[in-house]
Amino acid sequence: MEKKLNFAVRFLSLSKEQQTPATRSIEFLAGATTRAMEHISPDQADAMRRILKMCQDAVHGLPIAESEAREIVELAHQLENSFALGYSINFTPNENAQMPG
Image (cartoon, rainbow, N blue to C red; front, side, top):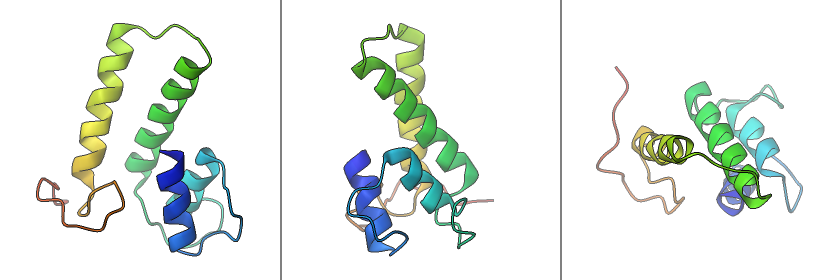
């Protein structure tokens, strides 16, 4: 996730840093740190933050409840369907994208 966020930030020229921490990348993409155009919605940014926090907790050995793990999987599915292009940053149309409205 961090690599893809870094790629998106560099692709959109939102930062000159080679490596941007994932949480900061989310803020760049949400337009929160630069007062720039919002590239992701507040809901998408929130979902990314929640997924990232859970993954960081797991990596650092904190216990993750089954319900929390299921929530993260569901969030990932919702996040994927919220982008018109696949969230893998391959820029191919996401046929499952849910159009706003």
